[in-house]
Amino acid sequence: MSGELIKLKIKAYSDERFSEEISEGVFKSLLNPDKYTFNYKIEQNNNQASGTSSSAVRFNKIPPENLDLEFVFDRTGVVVDYGSPSTDADDKVYKDEGNGIIDDIEKFKRVVFDYNGDKHRPNYLVISWGTLLFKGTLTEMNITYKLFKSDGLPLRASVRAKFKGFVEDNLRVARENNSSPDLTHVRMVKEGDNLPLMTYRIYGDPKYYLEVAKANGIANFRKLKAGQMIVFPPIEKT
Image (cartoon, rainbow, N blue to C red):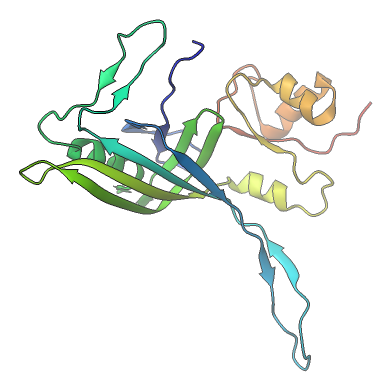
């Protein structure tokens, strides 16, 4: 619905293909972030050959992008979460329900931070909000508690979390294939995308969508999932 307030959502998966959802592994922010930051890096190879006085800087690789998120947990009852503009049924004042923000923080930590015992690693995460769609894992988290009840229970906290981007192996190989003339033709599916439309954006013609589907092992091109990565290979146009 137009104008509806969308909350930042983090969804946890146990596998690197993002197909096995974690039970109760969805977190929605109480309050949306004030900002988020993408960090990009290019790694250079500065190795110097024996007997030389200097070395030329050579490109090594581009590691996955990193995402920094900053947002607030608040149970003071001061901040109002406005729902759909067509109804005030979803409007909610986040008041203390007896445990301050402890339960909210623990829910967040279970989704993004807790160790997955079956897989022997932290969860894989999909973070979505508006145009933000990011796949990765948590690398660092800092929680600053700012306001407290008389008994010491926190009512407000700011959280800064850092995530490392993740690219599946087959997509990484496609991106790093130096013999391919279209190194940038790897796209993430967003809400509303379909394969013919995405194919048109890449090649200027939607008729190649069956070749793209075959290259990616897509059996049903009508049912793409938001967050899914698709490789668009070199195609000889006819």
